[in-house]
Length: 315
Ligand SMILES: *[C@@H]1O[C@H](CO)[C@@H](O)[C@H](O)[C@H]1NC(C)=O
Ligand SMILES: *[C@@H]1O[C@H](CO)[C@@H](O)[C@H](O)[C@H]1NC(C)=O
Image (cartoon, rainbow, N blue to C red; front, side):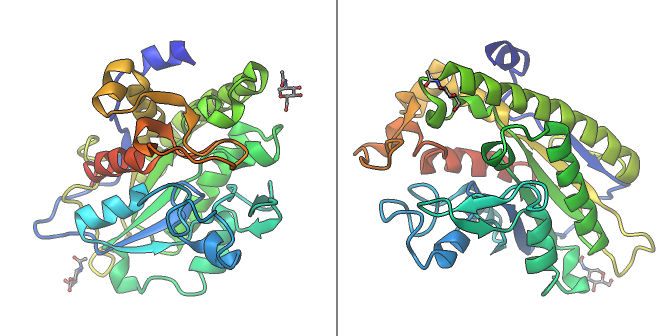
């Protein structure tokens, strides 16, 4: 993974896609609709588990010790946040079923099911779609619940979901691509399994590159790839054929950047290997801010803030 890290040196690079996006003065987003897993869930699993999961040491139903990245984006851009994300979610429950809870026994909806069951039942009104930004952020649960899951198939599920959203009227979609799953504390001390997850993650990044090209053919490319959503204001009520802008965020680049000693030191992070919460959930450190990871799987609130501020730049 370190070879890959040196290749992808730029931390905040974002490749993007759009159709004839004409920046229109005065346009802005009103809503942030989030489809995802524990990296963006702000309480769905908490509700589902009747407050039992995540544990009390966590921040009010978040899978970390403070606001998650989508909350920072919503606050920075004054957006109304709507959370469809569930901790433990896969890209499609029919492909691999995802679970959450202390005993991993709560069935949670995957990306496709979050759209079909949650979003479709009460979609955003047509007139508001142009001012809504849809987020797609799935980080590896497919492999966690089925280590034989194919990265190409996982990204195909993401594509299926994106097309579903477009059919339902979504015009602005932000896809958070995956990071190197091999670096999570859960795999610390087992190079074999860590290596297997790194391999899956790298294959998934390649599959995302292909996805970007396929969707560019379908929906076009953005005028400003660094800020795909900045100044973009699609308007269904005026356009005969709705325009679609899809932006991609390279989470792996950001985490590789943060893991560089100079950068982590600057952030006050001294431990990029172990979580603040031990892998058996029995101990919680007193200095979460010194950690890259909050627990075996999830980044700390500090890292979520860095991520949220970085993604705000795309909008
Ligand atoms: C590493 O993880 C794999 C898969 O879970 C397991 O089969 C293997 O025994 C583990 N190795 C060590 C050294 O713990
Ligand atoms: C879309 O166009 C209609 C009609 O011109 C206008 O009333 C509405 O505010 C526009 N919506 C956005 C998000 O710009």
